[in-house]
Length: 69
Image (cartoon, rainbow, N blue to C red; front, side, top):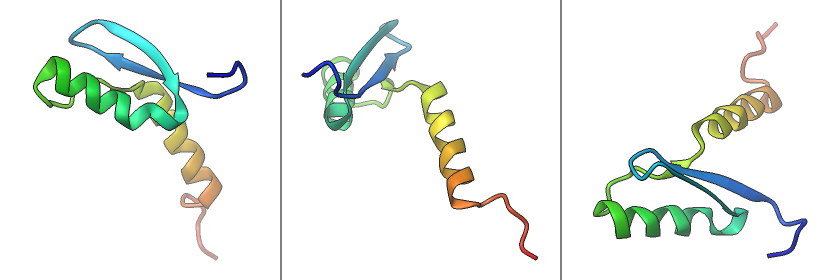
């Protein structure tokens, strides 16, 4: 992984761990962790604060909150 490659924080509330993984490995890393540690149950996830920030940016970028004339 290069220093300029974006990473995403992954958190697991049950294991009380946080890690950062390259953007292109997020889905695989989360799935692997949940399969290996939680019998496939969805516990580890992308940091909820980051998910909320991204959702806000998408809503703003798409203009979903703008009132139609």
